[in-house]
Length: 120
Image (cartoon, rainbow, N blue to C red):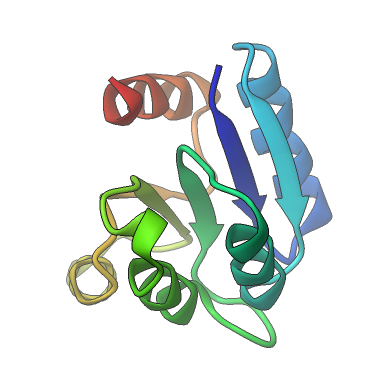
């Protein structure tokens, strides 16, 4: 079982991610923006972080860069959720040192498969 925050300003998307991950026996913490996610990561260790890109307060790029600066998160898998998955988003993923990029809306089975791959 992994402990995973679902960081997204959309409550319905956080719920969808949480539903799928909890059905696969993961513990999920929902946070509404990147700042909340970063604050939570400073208080506990997560096995994987899943985050939206565009959010208020602190976007997903800044969140991932902040996480990579924390000693316990240098090798933690970071998955980015983005509405688009074109070249610009791929470049953003690389610049934020994200492990992977999932398009939104996401396919729950694909999410499960990607999570399983990055955790193994």
